Length: 271
Image 1: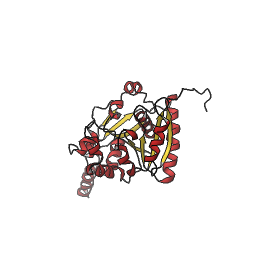
Image 2 (image 1 turned 90 degrees about the vertical axis):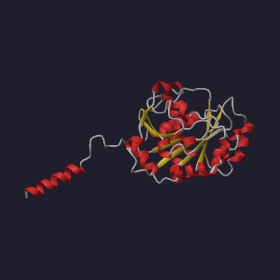
Image 3 (image 1 turned 45 degrees about the vertical axis):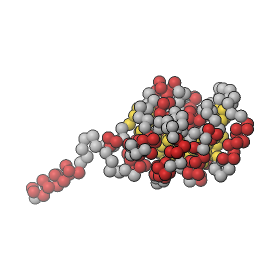
Image 4 (image 1 turned 60 degrees about the vertical axis):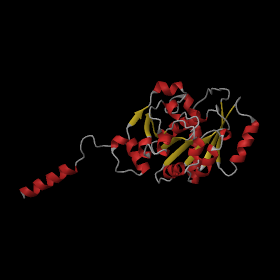
């Protein structure tokens, strides 16, 4: 009997988790999303975003108590209701031209969605001409998409697990590329997107695409996404530019239309 007890105790000690072996929820989320259940936890180091950096870039949606986050929370609710009802998982954020606030909207929307614990969010910077996601978030790791396409990085290593307040999200940043058009149209890009967008996890993927009228980069990606969020800006976007964009969006589901840089109007009544 004594030998049996000793054998049972040894089995319990072998099965007990070792100290430090518990994987943080965000890292586990990244591993499950990418299908890499055997990867080392060290590959998914969590990056704490700097609040001062976020505030300087008007990134506020990580903080539910900030009144400026409310428009993004309203946008989140409307967009997710439409996406959920249709079974859509991939949202592309576009604008007609630069300087419309496209990237600002994409990041704040991602931060707002990421505050919902049941949601897994991946933000991908696919503006290979003028990438801004990493700079706005203050990320040092920026090789991202380019590193994957040029076989310098595995997709798992290119993704950054970021945290700000109650927002936890995965970010796939990128650096600028002089051959962006060739990379966008490459087989490597298609394979990477198929891998990212084809996961079975309950993931919301937000793609920050280049402006529609700045080249054909965004147009090449549109057939791979479920729906589009169009961002235009008062004083920047012209009516004829919106009409021009409509030609490229004929076969794409436009889930919402955001008017940015409008005159500020502070409500005096809140629930």
